[in-house]
Image 1 (cartoon, one colour):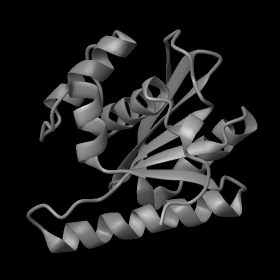
Image 2 (tube, helix red, strand yellow):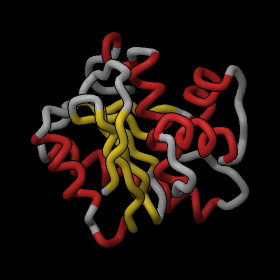
Image 3 (cartoon, one colour):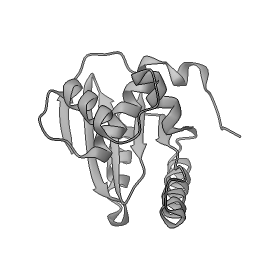
Length: 159
């Protein structure tokens, strides 16, 4: 796990970019804690537990989308389902699933495919030169949830 400072306000939120290397990000007293961990190893559970112990009760997850490969889409949906199931088991019931279109349009003014824009915004936010692209997406999801106060209006489950 890595930590970088950022003084924006927060909503006690954690963000996940589900993938074989799952990106995550959350804040503790203004500090963004972030990383990307192989999903299969289960260490993302430790990050989730740490966030929960620091008061995080809201989670935003990037929704899987059907790109070029149906098998990859299926794997991402399974990872997403396991994340949601685990979160509910530890008592985090406020889970928001955001489409890539939704958060990218909000942050960048238009849907931008690829990772360049999110990498650039996350690097600038953290003032770092190198960053895993899954962690960058999680950081951008966190920024989206904070800037647009997703959890001020959303309470409960999506249909």
